[in-house]
Length: 308
Image (cartoon, rainbow, N blue to C red; front, side):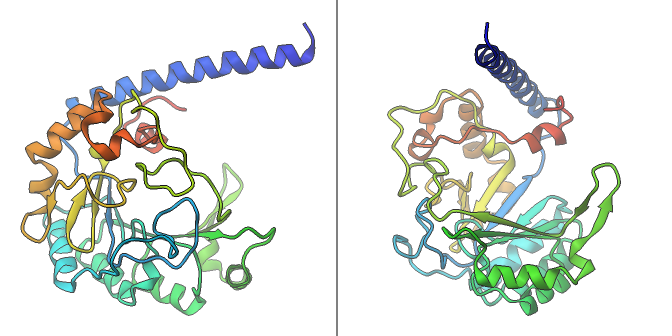
């Protein structure tokens, strides 16, 4: 057996082992949800403005194709959501974005400040494409209480966009964002994470809405844990179960008239979870068109389920 054949054999064995391990982890994760009191959402996406300023071909939110109205979430609704999270002492992730560019909402600093004051244990993050973003705004948003900023710089050039390059140069001289050296790994635990991405990436079907993705011929026969960990809230207050659901078509309720926990623990949400945890992605049209793998390694880690 030559070297290439040996390598192929090794890769096949590795793939089989990895698939078996993931299957075992998924089964343990299923058990975990029924052994503990049902947890609060790990992630709550709050989309305060339905608008993006990029042309990414993999996302329907790109400004060439976006069919949505330019909607703003009412200030009173943001206050209601944060007040309810305060009442339950929420300590997980609040993401003031979903399928949008958060810095297009000029109130975003105010919202981060309110969230930090009302929900002090929460982890506050933003994801931005960095277009038009300045260091002044970065300082303001962190001073307001942001924990982590992700900048995905979408460009088809070899280098970062000029604006993001300028931000990177300025960050080099600011220790606050460089963070603290992690001894075991030898790298800095940064608070601003910048990635260069391609405008023409193919990132999956995004529940059938990705402009540059192939359509699934049939629904995947795989469990999905998204409704066990995630809640998304539209500018109009509609609650969806997943950030892949661009139109919030899964509609679990509306936070204008219902409380967050009432929606989260509702019979509708529970039935949806039971279908998806058993691999029935035909439970909803968006799910039937979705090719998301159904889990995150972060979930395995947080539930103490096997190293990956």
